Image (cartoon, rainbow, N blue to C red):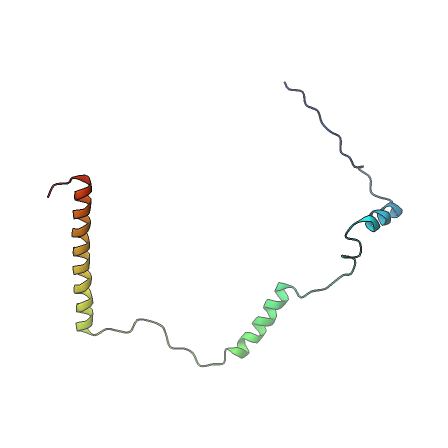
Length: 106
């Protein structure tokens, strides 16, 4: 078992008297800065105001969907062939480089 030293708190456990409280507040470097209550607009109030304005602003016509336009048959076949050739060439280059680095068989 270890012995420890415990420092007692440097404060008292009782509330301040009203005269002591006034003295502590007056001696604070923040005296006078936070005494005035300010009722600012909360985030909830800002979002409610935006939501109220949103239906009025969204009266514009609906935009067209952003889907892909259909390609014709020739264009689709060309893309598919180019993709297949590119994939095949890439695979052969990768095999050649890795085979040269790690001494694989041909």
